[in-house]
Image 1 (tube, rainbow, N blue to C red):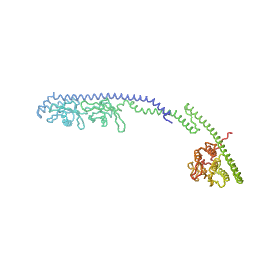
Image 2: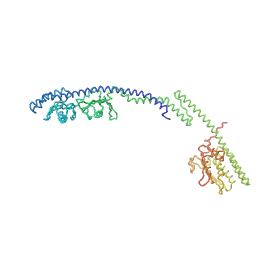
Image 3: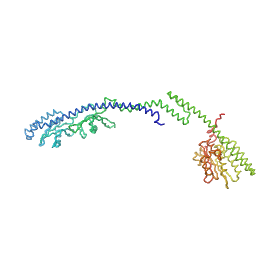
Image 4: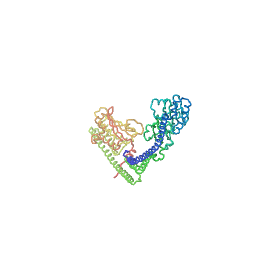
Length: 605
């Protein structure tokens, strides 16, 4: 059955077309709701991030102005340029500058250190709220690079990134004069405020990354998360980004990524918010998208099961019943379904099969009666044909005044006719058929003394098989009539019988095994078939003219078809050493087996 044309397929398509817009609407509604949540959460956290970055940038800008004003308004720094290095006044001025720097660090709460560097004497004055030695080492290592950047260039407001081993910092250096440089140092960790982002959850957090994507501040994010965020820095111009991380178990975890690039340095403020934590107040909207395909499948399967029990299963039972009826099984009876509509169909089907069964039995019995009558008519038709030939032989012998031969001929003819009284039977034993052929050939030998001989090569274990009466005689007659012409040597007819399992094994000697096909051959050493006649016989054209010269062959062939159908057959050929050969194939059956297979028709009166 074509599945595309089935009701099941049409129902699935129809239900899908009905459900699809509803699921699409629900899907869109949930996607839209999640987008609204993302927009609101990103807006809130972006405001926090922008405020934090703005505070940091404002402090850095104020620090820039502070550093630029030192060379113009601070008398102590100006006086250092004119005082002798190491003198008492020089030391007192440096102390006042140190005190001022320490006071200003408290005012600029983001600043970690202020410093003044004497390039001529390689002397560093450092005021810091942290570890003095660490900060001093960082500043001293960065000063050559800072001075080189300031040499000959217009001073810029950007802050440089320096690395201090396990931590990173921003440093800003300005040139006071040819000898002194002032600067400020900011710890990167002081610029990161993860506590402001309340939606970060256990797996989220904030981090400051450089242009190369490396982390510049401490963070609650792991290295994989930082690497993931760094790969999406290019999209910081967007309000937010939804990025995915593949976990060790192969599942995907989504984050909402926010970020702002710093205007004061080559760094970026990044915030990652886990979507599952961000959506913790909206579990329905998050789960419904995942459950939509499952829900659709459950609804569809439930509907299919319901319709299967209500409609498809009874219809399949009805279809299988119709197929069995088409194969000839007329005893099919279907159970009555629960549906009243299908109950009518089932009742009509059962009634139809019952009527067809009775009608087929009546037709079959009528065919048996017709075939039996036709078979008996054909069988009786061949007797006058032989009687006429026999009378011609007696007439010929009497005209030759061969009275003794006439007497022998009459004796054989009496035995022959005695056999003919039994020829009205549907089948006879093979030994009876051969005894009849022996009488006929003895009659022919009387007609052609010393010119005709015959050989009957029949095993005794085959004599109990049955054949239709007068099956062999027409071919023996034709052999004598057509093959016994203008001959100087004796004409020999040989009749053989053997068994085989199939028609294709008809020329094999099969021993004493029990096979299902009986083969009879009538061969002679005469002139054989003419080529055109042989071709017509091989094509079965003898049956086209039942009233012509091949009436005997046609009669035998048609009787075999009527009785055995395709289980029997005839073959015609010329032998390689001369002479004709006729092969007859019939089922190997005894009288008991034949009677069981082909019972007498019922006499209806």
